[in-house]
Length: 410
Ligand SMILES: *Cc1c(COP(=O)(O)O)cnc(C)c1O
Image 1 (cartoon, helix red, strand yellow):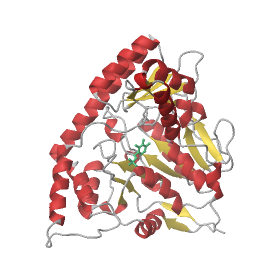
Image 2: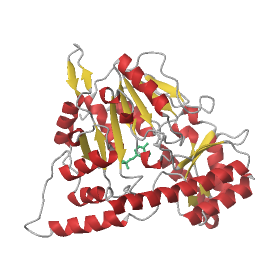
Image 3: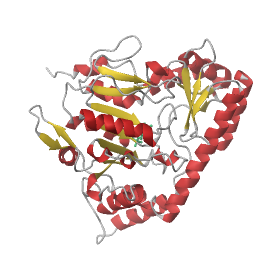
Image 4: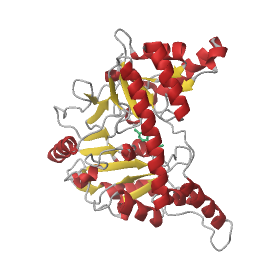
């Protein structure tokens, strides 16, 4: 008898997006005519074409592979040095991140899930609420939780509510925790953390011997030079934080797949007996055992994003999406809705009109405006009463969405 991992049975019926797809399909079957008008502002996927610098580098790399002299097979599991160096120099200038501390992968989704391989069970894990569902579900799969309650919260996790009342910056946990997931600029709330706020987390982590798992997938969207883009801008972070970054949202690599994580060499965890072990060493072992590297053309494409042209092309993409976010924010505000985020992130987080819950709002936007948004409750109990609009779209679609919002909610 092949026994299954029964932790999977604790998971809710679906990951949020399959449920959204199910409702959109049901709508299409019921209202085929209206369904042709549907505009998707739900899933956080980029829409604009791949930057030219990346395409050019990728084509050249493919041609190199077509010649015996320059053919390459398996690359280093950790990533080619050319890319790790480009990351260290360009993504972390002056922050003391060494190319050896960078591990290239095929995505932050996988990285944020896989990282649990190097941590033991039975620890206290803090997760902001609402949150990117991957952090929660991977902890459920790993057996780090009990069952979930009606609101979808799992026993054993420590939820840190992010609400309008606390400006979407969670209070430090009242109890001592061991692992903390933070994501800034935040998905789904679109809010950002200041250096002062992050310093409190780093101080907490150091005082409590905790590790911060810092997801900076949206760092390119930070518009204010005063706001931190990396946790390593915070004093003491190298002793307590792992950072996750991706080329998905800056370079539009959601379909190309390339990301990396940074594990400082001085960062350690503990055995049950109190022996200190470097997390870098454990991850290197894990990564080289279970992963065989990102493809060479993709790593060349990622490297090209750090060229002068690449940086310019990223800047234009970010400007485009941020222009969309500003329009969406304005359209919702004009309808009298309370709107958060959208200033340093491609997500606008909107409070539902009085008396509507977030799935109700999802259905209403679909039925009346044929706009697909994401219900806040899908990101956690504290997301109830909100919905997320993604700015990843063409300008034309965003303008149309704004017009429909004005018509339906105005
Ligand atoms: C999109 C996103 C990522 C990036 O995922 P990839 O697997 O690299 O495409 C990571 N974290 C969050 C919160 C995201 O929204």
